[in-house]
Image (cartoon, rainbow, N blue to C red):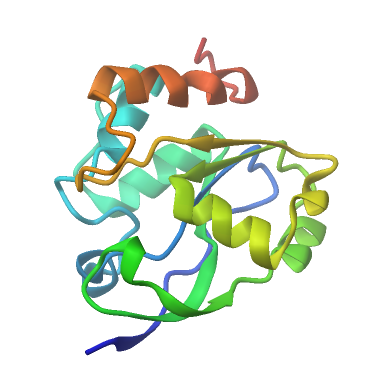
Length: 173
């Protein structure tokens, strides 16, 4: 049985955001907790800690402050969908988020990182990559703890995610 899911997590973005990381749709656990990457097994926060070379706080509000301090934003490509469980492979009947308006409202975004193949394919299908003519972008290995077809080690994931360093400020090199 598919559940109708509404993504109620607002974009974490402001005028100073340079790097916007896009997931597909939060897991059931993340939606229940009202937190991006709320599953403690997800590698996202560990990868961010490695890139910023600091310990990421456990407190979610402080995590959001840390991202904003380093000009990193979060959002998802999907506003609503049907999905059984939390797997991207089970996502059906997608309603995408409005990126046209987001990029008008926040013109300082310089890099879009797609957290996994589903986020990338949804953006490409519903928005089109031509929307990114003035924004660099890259499809990143998923931070999900669920093994996928292109399994990478944690260190390999960190190495690829380091592409964001040159877009950040505050001494992350």
